[in-house]
Image (cartoon, rainbow, N blue to C red; front, side):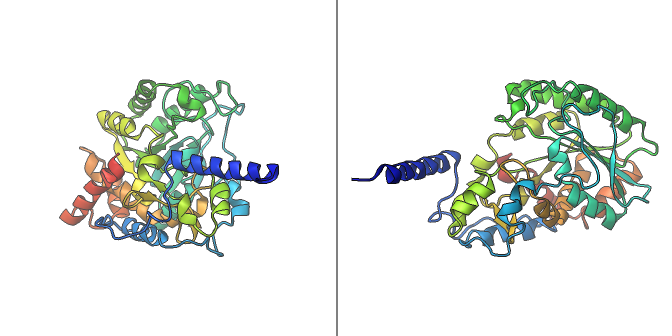
Length: 360
């Protein structure tokens, strides 16, 4: 007969196992094997997908993991000297500058925490390709023109005016930005999840249509995979069998309105950047890739991982040059610089493949 203490421990383990099963994590026995899938042949994308495939044969938590689990909870990029707004803060449209601060070409990055988490990648790209990055971001305030409930459980009264001010600031830029990149969370389980899919997609279209697309192209990033559980919970528990913390892509992507987002964005002639190929390959989405934590919590990416996939992100953004009917010379040159040989048949085919990666 088990003691009460051992019984409680057994119940806890059984409960945790049920959670893992319900959210679609991958068992160690079924995660590795031969695959017929081929990596997407784009610079930085194919290499990260090969790294994902290799990660599925690694069972032990790397000793040189970056960052260590003890620092995981703060490992999303949090702005450095730039303070992002949030509930209760000013609604003024104040931009944080990154990239090549002396460049005359400008890329705008706008959205909630799903925008500023990508700053390490965009900062590196701006320095490499000589463009300035202007970030407009407010935590918990998506770019979609909708009233939202913030993580504090109340309506962020500053979000709607912030969005209005940002749209006005972007449209008024002279010279105009060469590219505007939008990114936001559309997770059904988030505090914002009380909105319907129709409300979300209408809000996405409304914001895009408020921006001056005749002057600059707009790209929307989507396709980020969620973690099955916070890494410091799952990876610490399964340090000798970390593939148990990997997720199937169907589970990692299911709580976001990605198909609906793609449809809405396409309907208003903006570009789509499907980043799911940077997180998942052959239906597997691990939480450790190349000794790097993918996530800082269940929803946000680690800043070291954002830097790791910089070239892959550049390729996916570069692919969008084919999604616009008209571009200024500066915008076309910027997008083409991000992806060499973007007009070749093989690269066009790889770009098309990236658009439908993971069935979203």
